[in-house]
Image (cartoon, rainbow, N blue to C red):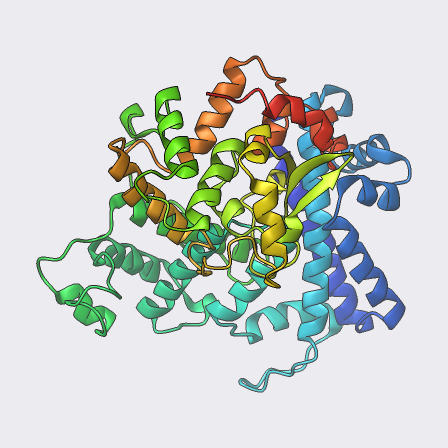
Amino acid sequence: MTYEEIRRHVQEHFRELLRQAKVQVATDGPPNAFRMDALRATEGLAGGGASTWLATAYPGGAAALLSDFCDRRGIAGADLTEANRQWLIEALQAGHASVTAATLSHVSSLAHIDLSDAVPLASAGDALALQDTATAKSVAEVATSYFDEIRRTKPLAVKTEFDRKEALALLDEVTGKKPIAAVNKSDAQKVKQVLLRLPKNRSKMAATRGKTLEQMLAVEGVDVISPRRVSTHLSNLDAFFRWAANNHYVSENVFAGMQIRTVKKSRIDDREAFSGEQLRTMYRHLTENPDGLARSDTHKWGTLIGMFSGMRLNEVAQMDLDDIKQDGGVWYFDVTTGGSDVKSLKTIASERRVPVHRRLVECGLLEYVAARRSSGNPRLFPDLPYSAANGFGRNLGRWFNEAFLTALGIKKRQLVYHSLRHTMATRLAQADASEKHVPAIIGHAQSGMTYSTYMKDGFLPAQLKLTIDLFDF
């Protein structure tokens, strides 16, 4: 079976369960307190670790879960590949989280009586249909449920969530904040045409700043957003309306098929790894700092940690002091969203424990951390501000990409802060590092059911320490 076929089976199954739940509420009234507590507990379990969810929801384990689902859907379980089984378990857990969240949201919505339109009384069997036709939710209201569900099931990277919210805000601008059910294909086409003419950096550029959308579009001679950016906005609107259609907020996805063709990136645009000579140059200027290029501890340690860990820019920039821990005598970075509401990770696999490389210890990282602990500020780099669009990494990334690399004479398009991560992955592969350890360090999903399903807690720092120390230059 294909991944899309599995998702369709799971989607249809839980869509029917949600429909049944709504009909039952329309007939018998909202669930009692005991049932509501059970729903909340189920939602919490489904949004947590797979092993805990399976043990509680299906005492028989993964085999019982898959057998039961395949029987219900008429799927030949014996024909499923290992990848199929892995996909199916992950999709079923996400489906349980989604259906309980949607049921709770539906029950919660009944506390409000909409008096905007007179609606004739109807039988309980017609109540669900009447509810759908009587409501006129705004895009913003539906978006709140959309992002709440995503955060509970598969959180987005900060930049991705910001981009999706930006696309929805533009939709409201173009349509005059129409109720979501009233947005039609003509509106979708209008949004597309606006995007193709939308000025770049419109809120910052003097020629467009402070103007209405209509006035901005009339300004001549300004750069417009790139075709790739247009496509990103349309893809985000397509994803949102597809979800809205699946959850019965709209009758159809009016943005389906609206994406534009863009030129595929050539290999010349790909990120490159740094050479050994470049790494040695950067290391010397960060540790000895002969020309004063590293103007702060954040510049020094924010770059060295990225160099010797393979962590993403925002993962480094958002770290708290409490994220630097010790286990079995091994120091490690606890890459997590814990400790702050604004910390974020790109994917579920991003949550991991990365051992502190021996070179970081040798050049004094632990002493720096100890000194920072006495400051009373919980963050490792308190001078890095938070941005909804870029998390905490913007200033460090700009210094590294635009000032540091330029001053060292090694600046080019393919070399940026993210290249440090690419370098770590490349050099570990060249050192014949374990194929299971490398994604655990980098924060990529594991392949194979054993490691992706039953290794949710990840490898121990002591197991990964020898591997990460293979990185050298």
